[in-house]
Length: 525
Image (cartoon, rainbow, N blue to C red):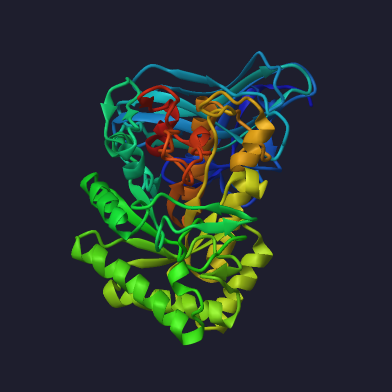
């Protein structure tokens, strides 16, 4: 296209304070453009409205069929004085001598942050941020600038000017935290955690200092009971991960200002879509007898928690119960059992929200599950999902679209019950075989978006994940798996085994285990 050095306006649509998304301006009046438009300077014909975007189908683009230099900017007005950061979703061919987002005339120093080349999946949008922007006087100019050769391009969308994150201060009303069940077990065998500077502290204090405010706590019926799997006997550590242990953990979490999310497994052992073993004490029970046992157990859990002033705000009745619970395959009896769990919770605490925890977000499966729940009269408050990049093979954007869909289909808000991303591909004891580690924990980052198994990659992925889920407007909380897992002898996933998920925690392999920079994701998303 031919370059012309002048200036022109680019239409946009403002859908939230300081959140800008590009849309076509066919219906926009000149007044709207003058007040809310973007101005391009330099080779203005190299700036255009692209027919693809992160938020919708359009974004701001820079491209030309000859060498060009152009910038597009927008002046934000009536902003409260303070420190902010600028965020935008971007794509780029790479190779330009300049490709950046910027701020200027904000009352402090100008900022410039480079837009990286888009690698691999061209459906992926990379978040780029400029930090520590001081705004004084109420105005701030934000924009994107590029200088490139023929054919080089960039796209930018969803510009947000947000208050600068502060450690310990949640950035949104969405609950963001994770599973802390291993805390007591790990301490009992000598495990220790430290903050980023190496100062040994209670792990919950470290989490709290990073705005971690949702504590998921698992409860098994009778840990220590042997369970046979594929001809081999396994058992959880006796005296931990049961009701009494959960009370201790819940009290500690409340002392650190956390919202409680209890997870009932209705088993003596780990449960997942392929494994829903009935508790040994319930073996042989059928129909009404099994329903009574499940009701009584749930009721006991709730009354015990309430008596100890740790009534949970959320509780899941079952864990990853896609096709079974308490040894019962999905069908009418399965939904009747879940209804008894719901009734037991509400009998003690009508305010506690009951979560249904499913996994592997397949739209057809979830719709069928929700249809059957309606058919059999199941009541629940939130639909929950495990959503890992490895298991789903979904981009973050695809996961957000899925969340929006199931929220609308179920007419419920959503709880992300599990998500995880590794900071290393080595176990604590040095195994470097990536394939063996994938087999061990199935949390390899190689979904469609791989930012690298490093603390920096973990931080970047989780910030994008948290923000995308928040932006849906339907996610009440996100629980990470497993934020505090450290590999200490005696605190493995079963008796006699290692942790198997220490590579996805937010703590390194030193002694004591030091907090990684990726823990900042909980307050900086």
